[in-house]
Amino acid sequence: MCGRYTFFEEIPSAELEKIIGSVQKSNPQFLAKSTEINPGDRAPVYFYKDNAIHIKLMLWGFLNPWKKGIIINARSETAAEKKLFSPSLHSRRCVIPAAGFYEWNREKVKYRYTLSGSPVYMGGLYTYYEDGPRFLVLTVPANQSVSPVHSRMPLLLQKEHIRLWLRDLPAALELLGTSQPMLQAEPMEQESAQLCFSSV
Image (tube, rainbow, N blue to C red; front, top):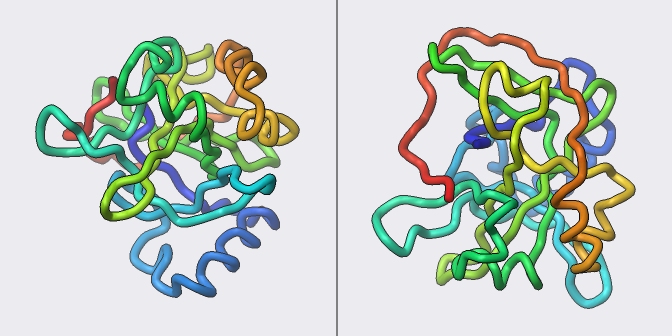
């Protein structure tokens, strides 16, 4: 699963800095409390509407219809079969830009995953609730760079595939099965994982 991610890098990305600057003009409190994005936070998300790609702050986590809490991830292999996710997969796909994401191993050691010299673009879905749009991150089986720590990883898209993912359903369905890039793993300070959120 993907339970936390960040916008900040040691060498700032011009693209991520531009995104942060853009959303902070209308949302000055964005990222003021933390350098990490947690479930339930508002974060910038790319989506497609009216023949253009837009970026908007959305809440991370679909409301769980079966119990309290939120659903922050969905398995890419079964999203099309799930009533909660299928409508979004077909018409409300999104991209979540980040500097990197975090996973925890069985010993609760936190690892930061990054793509050298580039932001990561996580494929996701969004939908609308009374409190506004909410998104989640699609996950795929982990490749060799992540599997020593966790069995799942976010669906990562190449920058040149963002428009296809957002606009073209057949292309998006093909991208669900593409191989994932090898990432750099960095162990962080020991910290307990937040395990109270759902992934289905």
